[in-house]
Amino acid sequence: MGALLDQKVDCPPPPACAKCTETATIETARYVAERGQAVTDHYGRPLVQFDLAAEARLRWKIDLQRELAGLERDLNLKHYDYNTVLSIFYICYIIFEIPSNMACKWIGPGWYLPAISLAFGITSIATAFVHNIHEICGVRFILGVFEAGMLPGIAYYMSRWCRKSELTFRLSLYIVMAPLAGAFGGLLASAILKLSNVGSLHEWRMIFAIIIGFFTLTDRLANALWLTQEEKDLAIARIKSERVGVTEGLAFFAPTIVKTIYPDRSVISQQLHTVPPYLVGSFFTVLFPFLSWKFNRCLLFFILGAPFVMVGYIMFLASNDPKVRYGAAFIIASGAFSLGALSSANVAANIVSDTARSSAIGTNVMFGNIGSLVATWSFLPSDSPDYRIGNSLNLATSSSILICSVASLFWMNMDNKKRDRINVEKKLAHLSQKQIQDLDWRHPGFRWKP
Image (cartoon, rainbow, N blue to C red; front, top):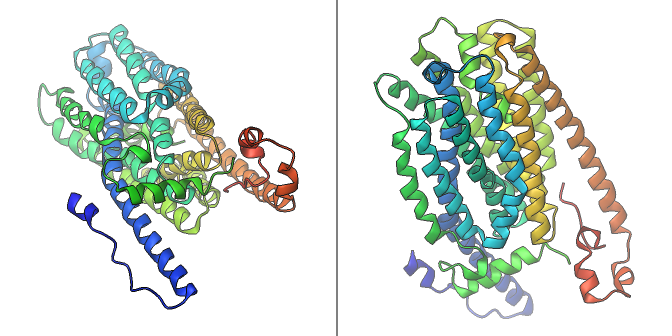
């Protein structure tokens, strides 16, 4: 790879006219930009993808252990103890979301993200040694502290490296690791459940891989050791050119849902049935953001995803047929999993300053996890096996997503048209350079990215 980066760009012979010179310059710049972005993807993305895959597998595993591997029995959990265990995690997650992302900015993503991932991995091992509700609540609280900054931190980190149109797809390649972890976790679980005395200790391997992140994640483009100076300069210019002064309801309770659909199947069969919906969800997690990148439209595909979720939960509520409800899980996964990437990318694309973007992404993910907290108390044992409360809330939430997304799209387009009629030079004529920089989204040259 080092040899590849040291190679010089093969430029065409000197053109005979000014227009040809301009064309050659544009082509050379495009080549360098594409090469720089490819190298950045090669070095930066795999480690953050691994982080989410490992953490998603650990978070998902507690529902597997509860429903299919006897966690409630082993820890003597009664009544709503399991919901309390989940709530402890999300309450902590919500409280530390924004502070953690601000710390990510101050310390630097290159050190902060591997550090909290390493701490998460070490703490997760303690789950194998808990014996009662007090111990597991303590471990889950600490896990919430360390995981709170992962998703918003990585979204913030990637927003430093990608243009607005590129961010959605790159972020989806990170977020897709969650449903993939669920899918392959189901396959892994079906094998683990055939063994005896196997706990969570195999997760220690993730710690050593995460340590690599301390050496490969770079805070800023200017400090990237794997980019040539030419690639750094052009990549920085590309980013600056754009700047002027529900999922949890399905994800956490997938084994629970499958158990209610196929109550007579064996534990291993039930676990294997959780795999296909995750695989379908993984496909759409990448497809919608990819189309969003190509068409440079984010909210449009956010709007397209919401009806999938709505239809799926309507099927859950309207039918007791196991085949219909299992099919609904596929439809829900098709729309729900892509919303995370689209939402975070849309927030990052519409915030100008670095500090404000860090806070905004943290706030966005925080509200998502408030929904996760609600989900832990929406699927109660007393509402089993139909879980009408939880499914009704998910239907209402997905409907709200559709309404709010359509309203946001119309408002952004309307406000952009108003800004098009403003004389930028006249508006800024009496302001100092410092005042212009502080305008942020109020700058007359700013345009929303719907």
